[in-house]
Amino acid sequence: MIKSSGHRISPTEVEEIVFQSGGVRHAAAIGVPDDLMGQAVKVFVVGRDGRQVDKNALLAFCGDRLPRYMTPKFVEVLEELPTTSSGKVDYPALRRREGLA
Image 1: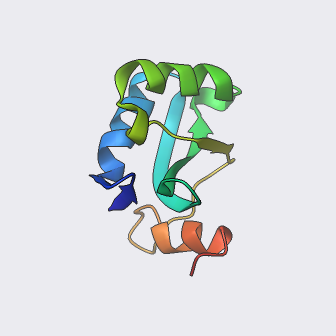
Image 2 (image 1 turned 90 degrees about the vertical axis):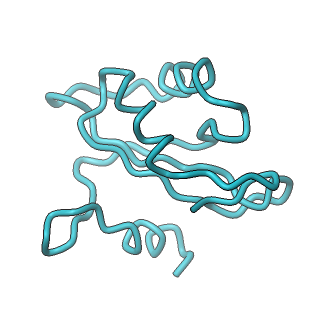
């Protein structure tokens, strides 16, 4: 769970909206420290079919469909998301990447 502005946010809910944008093959959302909100949402994405991800368009898409407190503040494009041995997204590795673990 991500805690932002007193709200509990499911990363899965944010990821589902990111997928609906159509240009993303993989997505993972985590909470990152934010002085005003406690945590802000950061999304790591992998573009679909080798296409570039337009970060501003993705943020606007999310902003039109999510409450402000759930809208990602940051988007980072990766070639691949880290995965566990079972093939699931390795969220602890993403948090370590941000210096959070």
